[in-house]
Amino acid sequence: MQSATSSDGGGGTVTDTSVLEAEVRNIVVQGSNVQKDVHDLTVKALSRQHRDHESLRDVIGAVLKGVREGAEHKLQQTPVQVQTVLKPIRDAVAGLDGALAQFAEASKLALEEAAGRAQKFSNDELVRVRKDLEGVENLFLETLQSSASTAHKVVSETLHDLATHARRNGTAVGSQLKDTLEAFNQQVASLGHDQLEAGIELTHAITSIMREAAADALNSIADRVKPNHKPKGN
Image 1 (cartoon, rainbow, N blue to C red):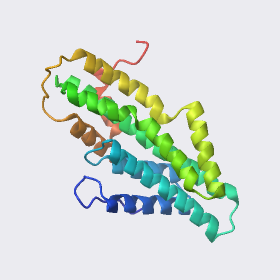
Image 2: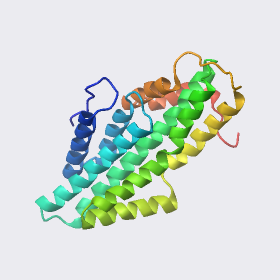
Image 3: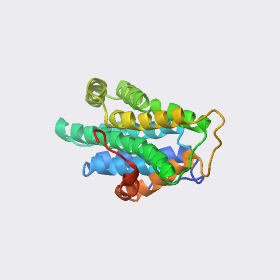
Image 4: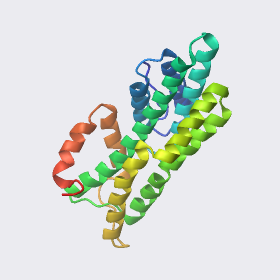
């Protein structure tokens, strides 16, 4: 599987999203290991610098465009049973959802690691990152619905059904965001207005964790912060 690469060192470019679209498209066409491969590609894309609202929109849009084009290509090229096309669509969307949930978890882990090192971030930065995170689930659902509107009939119906199901039953990213945003709210409440930014910026801390996640290291990160983390109910 080819890797998406950044031509500007992490700022996010047209080339970035074009490569991501193409890779997701190929994964859907091939139809094997779709959920894991789309998840891993999305995590890698999210591990670059400056994951603000617009760059998140670009990544989500590129993945879903690749899903749509791959499914439509598969339907056009071979007289396959519809189910053999619908499953990769569902798996790809699940992979994207899971990667966004991992991004939300990485944001929480960044706070926990900072607390473990007695570091604090500025109130302004916490509020800004929290605002971006609050919109991630809606961004995912809106882009999924938009992709359904531009797709052909069978693919459109499947994406529309996935969007409807996600709105009714929730998403992986939405579930993780509840814990993440709670942690952010607690941090914001604990800071005074004049809290100075200490050490690394929060966005850079999140990026660092996402890079480790892209290298399958998120479990070791979770273990590292576990002494500072008390599960609910304890």
